[in-house]
Image 1 (spheres, helix red, strand yellow):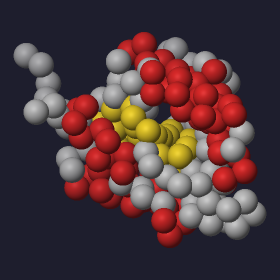
Image 2 (tube, helix red, strand yellow):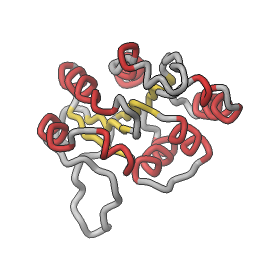
Image 3 (tube, rainbow, N blue to C red):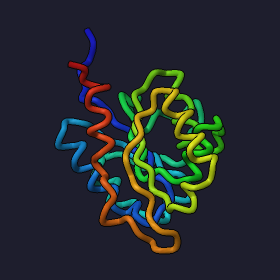
Image 4 (spheres, rainbow, N blue to C red):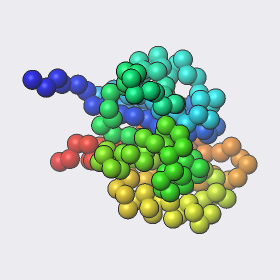
Length: 179
């Protein structure tokens, strides 16, 4: 007999000034019936209240690989949401660079067929770099669902009030629950 479990969403959090708002996405995902675990880039850990997020999800934040003999701290992902997704992470992911746990999970998700949505967060100077458009095109060609964030002005620390944390759930819904 197969054990039933609620669907599990990995939320990958990158190092951005708005990362402390990830609780909004976690709450919305819980309201839709998801269990949630957070995977953070190593630099992102300093941008969020780790204890509060772990209390909210019931799982430790993962940021480093575990040894093969260690038990898995979270169930396998049924879907992945990347929010906020930085210029660095988007470009490394599209290039297949797997130098952090977060990037390793994202690179493997393609081969595993795990539905993945990304909500970028970057400034307009970064978005003007040709690598960014090329990376988004590559991710789209891999089936990654891309959110609609409009880059903010450089050095403004902006976009916090316009960042749509739950858009990744809107993108994932049809992929996870097809009609």
